[in-house]
Length: 428
Image 1 (cartoon, rainbow, N blue to C red):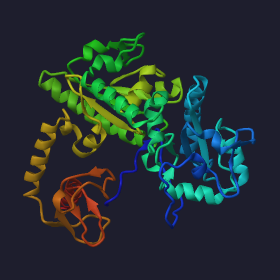
Image 2: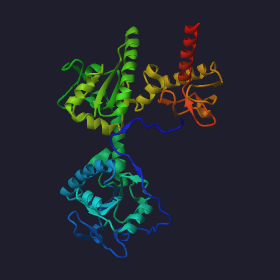
Image 3: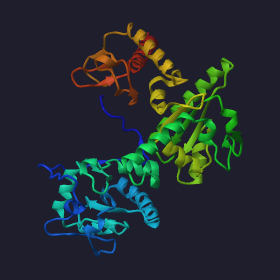
């Protein structure tokens, strides 16, 4: 079925649709914060203690408009992260302020949520101002952090403040175009000089954990190999579903490499587990390596590869450079044939699928669906999709119901047919 893959758990943020507004916004050139944040009946914002602070106090500062709500978990998760950045900047005297624009449903929820925030707020009762700000900045989901520079048009606002805070922390300040370009340049340089050693080694550790614990394997012994960094956690249901498949594929790849007298593949768990016990029990089910629980490198890798949801499998090549951040998708599509995950291998797999498709029936039926299915290519509607047979991602060729969008992998149709043939053979 043509739909977005949902079997993953966000580590960072989601967005939820809010309200839609009609009408045009009044975009004045170089607006003052008073023109944006004051109204006809109000020229103040609320402090954390409930005192009134004149909007004019914001002039000359970098201001973040924080669209959020107490009822939404990703907002509650992001607020303390943002508070940490805000307090650091305040301590060093940076000219930075945040204004909370609430989407809470009642005053009690607003007050409860505002009590966790060290910054200013638009009063809950001023619905018109909140609507106008949502309309002006075209807010489609929360949490959202819009960062405004002094004496700049609203159109020059930085709109991805939440992502920037998660990715760069306090280093993102002052959120100017120039600063963001500097950070992107630094990232490019880091990726260009990336090695397995500088990814996985920290000042106090040059090893990974191995089974059985407390066995250790040096990071140096992995240099020159293809290494998968598996971002996962025991508390994540999609991880628990994917891990057994990854274990099976891992064993098949290792077996093939042994037969070829090659041992150039390994996986390392990068855990998001919440306690040592959960990590230990989860890692005990795995045949590969792991970063120690709570190691500072885990957060660094999560930020470095911008991992926003788990499970996630990042593949690092023998040269220490990133091959792909979509290893999980490739495992789901191609199983052990995905190795070594390079573009050359993927092109070869696509060629093989095209060749195999030539011998497939043009029309098929699949159990659980009453309509005839048509074989379609990616160019004619075959990918990407979620298979209605195995509920895993598909790409390339598919059997598709033109009438209602039902889609299955060719291999899933083939597997059902094989079972049916076996049953007929047994009966005879």
